[in-house]
Image (cartoon, rainbow, N blue to C red; front, side, top):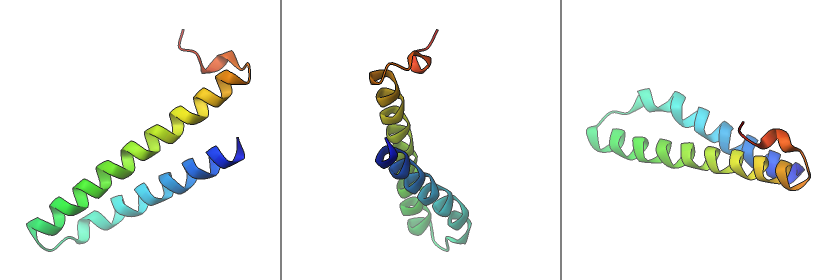
Length: 67
């Protein structure tokens, strides 16, 4: 579980760093590339969050269920 949480935190920190750096883009091509990297980082954060929720559910923590 700690590995999953650390992976989530790393992905989240990367997303935040990219979000802060996106205003420094000078050209349209650079902005487009930054947007792609931001979306990839966002999807990774979402994936890592789902992994954590899946692990919680597998360990018998039913609060990971949507009700």
